[in-house]
Image (cartoon, rainbow, N blue to C red; front, side):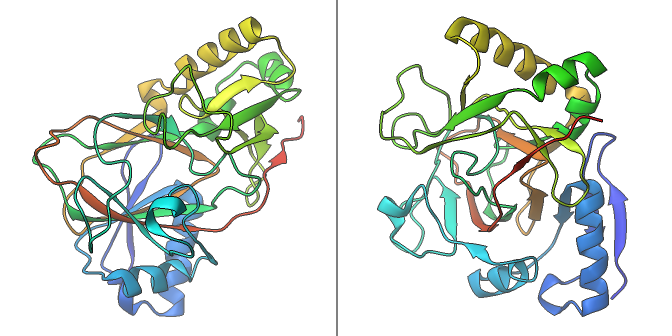
Length: 279
């Protein structure tokens, strides 16, 4: 095979072409892994993957993180889940319909996933696009004094899957999973600082009172969600997309619920994010 890497946008992302991920040798895989680190989001079109082939490819990046938030729906020790508005193999899909706010997967646990990988099985004619946000670039664009101030803070991340799975609610269940992480984390490979707050799951800055926290988070979300930091992906059947879950936030646009949207998701286990260090 001959691996070709083409940037998808100025913000982040690259398309990998000339490969069948089910038949990669070690040299080609090393190129893909390097491209993932460099571009943060990778798109590989035209793949034909069953669950075993997708998870086998994912395991080349690390250990599979079994499904956590939807385990009470899908069962324990499941390596994949379907982001779907239809039944798949007799099981309900998760996060079935509608717009979904920016977030990073599993940031409400001590150890979030390191990578998320989605494979498109059925796609609506319009909508249901995925937006990817470069949270490292968003931090780098802030004034130096603001960067230093943000490094002092920690953020409580909460996810109420049963009550508010796609749009943040003002009434979050007390037993919803949650964890406090640094507001600015250090990327484990590159060492660059990354803003680690998001509109769906960041509940408050723990060092600030509620009003101050709400103001700061609203300011950060407005900054981060500028189009200059975003690549919008329009799905096709057979698309395999994987992203750096520590450096990238993602969101979903609305779509017609009468049309099927089915994507198979697996994630790679990660470690606890560490605080960024001042330059």
